[in-house]
Image: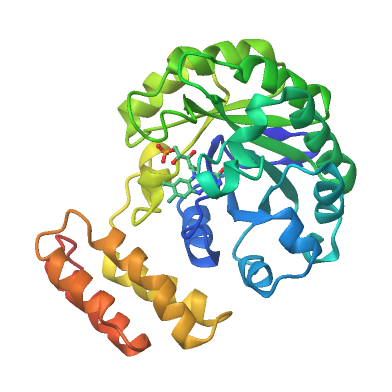
Length: 316
Ligand SMILES: Cc1cc2nc3c(=O)[nH]c(=O)nc-3n(C[C@H](O)[C@H](O)[C@H](O)COP(=O)(O)O)c2cc1C
């Protein structure tokens, strides 16, 4: 499918997930059939001011066929400067976060707070489009800020007018956070308001929930976040390709990729929550998690991975 000038190989994407969509998670998502994967959200202001933390989040590898970065911020000037900053020149596509519900972000007017001020949202997206040009810009949003007050059709239309090439809509409001059911009809209303591609998002965990979401929303594709954590191979399942995966081997590969970029101490810390996710639902997984949480070095994570291989159903 085409997002502006950019071709992507399929219609299932992995959106930004703070603390999770690192280089390893993205490379594995691509291997198993994701068409596009984004970094976790990066502060436009932090990037412009050159924060060290931001630089570490911007690492990419050649195992990513398409390189996607997500920026957050509500000041058009910073969004413009961030989108054309040399540190993100390596990215092929820029996503603007208009959905983050976290109080620290919202209180600065960022993330889902932009849904309360659509003219501002439009200015911010326009600034990203200008800064990122000629690379395409996408927008990720929720249905609205307050429960029962959907604004995503108007917000998506404003984003399209500002030059966005696709919209991802999480079918909840900010007030709902992650509770309650995803409102697929709300996503459908958003889809009807624009002529650019729309990705439906929220609670897609298997083929049935994907098919239901696409059918009800009429969306062009879907974004899968939480279900891809610890299960990057979900994209194969959703694309109808059967795969047999050893989760322990994935842990080793994931850590191996992090070690190409980050110091061992940092990579090991980053892996702890991933190991917990890879071990989720496996009988004996608790011991694997405990092993990972007490890890001091890469060897400890490799031991946890071996424990998971032994505990899982996967047989070579
Ligand atoms: C821990 C966590 C971190 C997230 N970080 C981001 C983020 O950085 N940017 C963003 O646009 N959405 C973020 N999200 C939202 C997800 O991208 C997605 O919209 C949401 O989880 C619903 O999709 P799902 O049901 O497939 O998980 C985050 C979600 C979670 C649970």
